[in-house]
Image 1 (cartoon, helix red, strand yellow):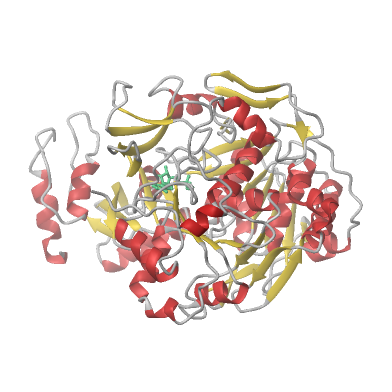
Image 2 (spheres, rainbow, N blue to C red):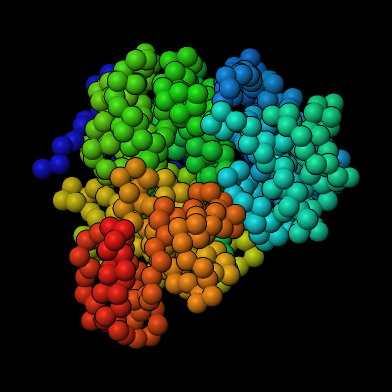
Amino acid sequence: MDNSYPPPADFAARANLTSDAQPADRLAFWATQAARLDWERPWDEVLRWEPPNAEWFTGGTLNAAVNCVDRHVAAGLGDRVAIHWEGEPGDTRTITYADLHDEVRRAANVLTELGVHAGERVAIYLPMIPEAVVAMLACARIGAPHTVVFGGFSAESLAARITDCDARLVITADGGFRRGAASALKPQVDAAVARCPGVLNVLVVQRTGQDVEWTERDLWWHETVGTASTAHYARAFDAEHPLFVLYTSGTTAKPKGILHTTGGYLTQAAYTHHAVFDLKPETDVYWCTADVGWVTGHSYLVYGPLANGATQVMYEGTPDSPHRGRFWELVAKYGVTILYTAPTAIRTFMKWGEELPAGYDLSSLRLLGSVGEPINPEAWRWYHEHIGGGRCPIVDTWWQTETGAIMISPLPGATATKPGAAQRPLPGVSADVFDEAGQPTEVGHLVLTEPWPSMLRGIWGDPERYRDTYWATYPENYFAGDGARRDADGDIWLLGRVDDVMNVSGHRISTTEVESALVNHPAVAEAAVVGASDATTGQGIVAFVILRESAELGEELVGRLRGHVAEQIGAIAKPRQILLVPELPKTRSGKIMRRLLRDVAERRPFGDVTTLADSSVMDLIVEGLAPAA
Ligand code: WTA
């Protein structure tokens, strides 16, 4: 019944992979993939698995930055462009692998001079400029795990992350360009660092030239990295040496620091980038539109493509600056062949109309990718037709911050794709759909039934939460937190989160996190937050708020509450809508029934209310809302 799109014959004829079958020996398969990397010392054992703790390539040593940069230069590819960078105002930089090599070694020397030792954390809070890539690789080079914090997060969120992983250095910029204006970053760092005594220095890239406050701990990037020596010896680290910590939202108010290590992570990032994106490093121009602040930026803008020696585009700004054809202008300008973006962006482009991309030469494109949330078939078909010209396969890639790399996706030269389905666990990956009892079923929870090389190694500083969140539901199987369905062909369709995590424009935001931000405002007595379906962003944040009696009512207050959430977490967490209500629907045990609130937010008749302590509450809420509806 489902329409499917077989791989185009000419694509399949040249594809890196022509079969999506599972290897007979999974561990031997991953050992073969690990051999894509340069190891200083080979591993003794492919996997040591004591659920839920995995070690991959035990005993092996390597340097992630050397694998992403030095070895390409050593192979004579120093002149190959690594990054075609485009600033939002239109300024550009072309960075070859040789340039990257120099910059990373300089930055590594500066980090060491500033006293950063292997194992010590460095926070990175930068716009989408090449220094973000350089900073990450410099950390990797000296074995200092980085924690990249998305530039849209507030000072509050930045401070919480710095404190949680005890970072001693912050790398930032004066600001970045966004929507036609210089947007400051340094003030947020100043505010955050004021509360983080463990931070000894702040290294500041000059991007916008705007005025910044300056203290003794601050250093300019151009005055330090710019003048540092390029002579730097990169030592190898253990395969299990921490590479980075990346924070993501869970079901509580406190974000989880997802820990990734070196050998397994880099192996799977490189392999999947080769297999899923069919990368031909000599001829492709690859563009992943994700920000480095998210895991997609880590694995598919930094580690995967650079380990594979790819040439890529990196863009600083938003798709509508200075005009709505910006993405297509860049595809045409750089001859992009592989484009990896998110459904929320695709739906925005749909809204803007197909005339826009039609005005640009997109004939260089040969493969399209999607990530971040389930892609609705309508958006898939639009992407296929209006961006891909009907000729480009689409890879709908399912994975998570925790999985480190793509887990479920069609292979473009092998899989007949179905709009809306991520379909197949990649070679070497084992996934299933379980019912509550842990039995395979048609519709249920997505689980990963075998460990994989790029799996998270834990939650920073919280082994118990690691176990409880991912391994307690189905012992020895990884619980992803996503609903899934298996169709008659055995293909997997993702159905969205099954926990209290919202997905807004492909960004994970916890309902509890927004609730606690609201409750911490003096006017708010209680708050419940739900993700309501949104035609563009996938989900939109809708908050139901009970005010304290002393609070002054009014539209202005709602605006202030939205601003308060932005200040507490970041603009991405600003509720789309805040509804002031007299009561919240609760079960007899006091649990808020978000399901009913979601019904209200999505304006449909609400479901079963029999488990409510007081079933008249819903009538009160709906009556109160009627005028606004
Ligand atoms: C969702 C982003 C359906 C899913 C790489 C997952 C998807 C969460 C897809 C992880 C997809 C991501 N189809 N759902 N292709 N890709 N998701 O950690 O709910 O930011 O659990 O990682 O995004 O989001 P995260």
